[in-house]
Image 1 (cartoon, rainbow, N blue to C red):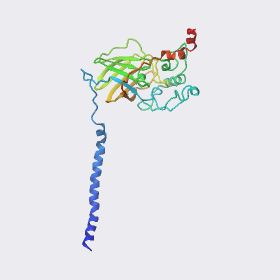
Image 2: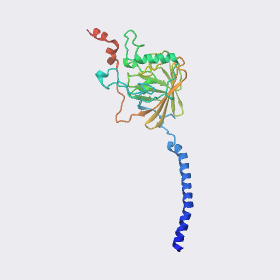
Image 3: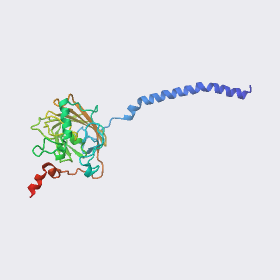
Image 4: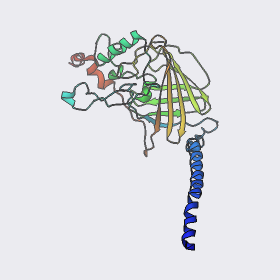
Length: 296
């Protein structure tokens, strides 16, 4: 056998062992890399800028949620609006995914029946019972908590060392949240009564003092005066904040449940909160012909 042929044959016979060794090392490297990838991808925990004079994150700014939860907190498909023959797709319900952790709201049977009744009558107007029949949003009542957070409008957080003010564009609703000084609700409010504290970099707000007139969404999801909401605002990047609200209401639900979604900082040049005073826009809807009669 020629020497050159013999050498090539030896090389061919030796190659599988060398190749297997290299591939084995490569597999080990890939496995190790994949095992640490999730932790590496997260990177170091985000540390938000501090409010001057404090060790707390500065949440000040204009924020907005981009979810369809104001239509329905749970999964929902696209549906026509109330007057499609006049408006086409104006006012149509967009499809959306549930923001409820676990997907569904844990209603008691009688409360679920009330939710379905609300949904059927959401645009019904009873001039003698304007606060108890139909969706209060359509009548320009303040939206309540947590609904104000996921309406399709921005809101502004204004922060000081001992309190936080949240101003919402819709209906000029607002909340003043004292930090670290818990006080009971003096009366019931549309927006409830808020008390705040810091849990690390998370702002935790406990909201009580509700009446039962507000809804969670246009689908008729509702609550009793015993509603208790625990909100958590956690900055996760310069432009994002994780929002979470746990709902407790033993009269309506079988257990506490939670909604969760991100909030986005509005960064447009000269962005500001604009007025959306809607009472005069709803007068004819709420009072019907009474408005015209009063003007004559």
